[in-house]
Image (cartoon, rainbow, N blue to C red; front, side, top):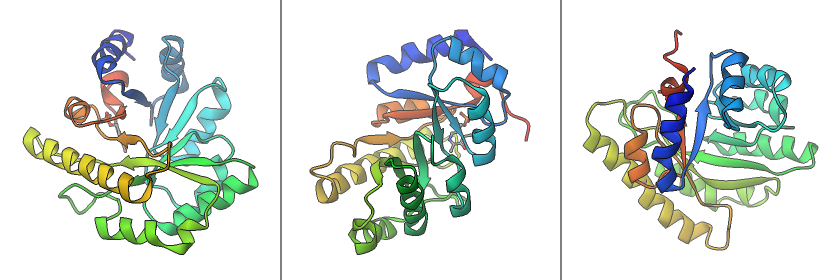
Length: 222
Ligand SMILES: *Cc1c(COP(=O)(O)O)cnc(C)c1O
């Protein structure tokens, strides 16, 4: 864990008014506490079980963001405390989040994950699926979720131009969708884009959240 890097990163982000999500997946609670003591409050995890066990051990004012692919049967384990779910990619998942949020007498903030990359392995809604979802009556009936914006991952490439194109495409889509479906919504304002390798490009293209892991915590061994 590198608090020097953390301070540098915060200074770099500051002019863009974006928020840093410290991605702590696979890292021990000691590492998280160190960053917490340096002032960080938003942490991101990609597995529900891991997030739940860390949440139980760590200070309660941490805001936990679920950033990884999510199965419907896992939603209930984190619905009491999760701060935002970045990886919503189906109506079925949204309905389950709504159901669990209702049980907990709360609303859960969600981002729709949009597919913008070239690789076939990345999750997310296509543009067509996105419009289909937002136009549906089933979606309109959900009262315990708040759609706060989009999340996406760019193609894993060293071609910065390509990454910039994908992020700026997403930003345009965001503006269009906000006008069309969320004109009256104050919540629809977030763009969660950018990781350790491409957060600078993301900041230049309108990121409001960047999700950074390895720069802060060191590389991961899977
Ligand atoms: C792991 C992960 C990150 C952080 O990746 P780094 O390269 O370590 O910064 C960001 N977003 C998602 C969805 C991830 O799974």
